[in-house]
Image (tube, rainbow, N blue to C red):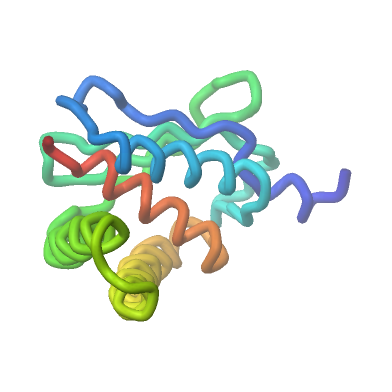
Length: 160
């Protein structure tokens, strides 16, 4: 396998200790994000590490996202900390639009659902772009990887 093919995540773990309870919809989003992430991702730490990687995500003290990067034997390589403050508004907006979307599926027309879904995707993309920007000096990721990691960040941040 070439070096570029090794610059990827092969396992992702979330700190489940901080989770109170998730709705079936949130749990579904988590499962889909993990599945899609493991199927196709680009994850290239700026440090000269040889992948593939295991990544452990946690929200530390509810103020920082901590991304522990490990080798395939689960030995620590790096620990990246990102303040959660730049994500708070976008996460709140994302959950509000998701609630509207899940509610709309039950009672609105397909065109109304599509309008809400377009807004939901726009907010999701905005959060993903912030994640790419915040990680740029630490880890190179593509937009699809950022979208899936942003979903997992939201799941970690979710309370209730």
